Length: 168
Image (cartoon, rainbow, N blue to C red; front, side, top):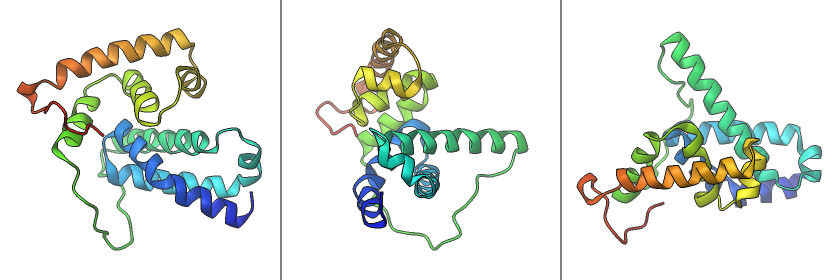
């Protein structure tokens, strides 16, 4: 993968992968930082990515693992999360339904949340989700079923969910 191809890959997938990681971890700032770091690492491994069938899966998995590692370090040290050194940027506020969805996703077990995000937001097939998380397809199907049931219970009209609103 040459520099131009990598730039095109970055431009076409950064926002999408950031949105997916945000849905998995619940913090947009943390998601942006982890995805950015994952792309830095991807640049260093671009020869491998050139041969990879799904380079976006590699970046997404790396970003997710970075987020988990950061969370563990933060929890152990009981310190606030790292902050970006650069100037603050303007980002459009998420819709109420998006906030409700992310809040509900946070309440799910990590395995269900990750399966739901990869399948419904990243639009991966059950087979691809199973490959990415390293579990059998039946396990992914069970996690999706249980996760959807739990989300349905969490996203009721009583909890601020609005029928017909965009959920992502």
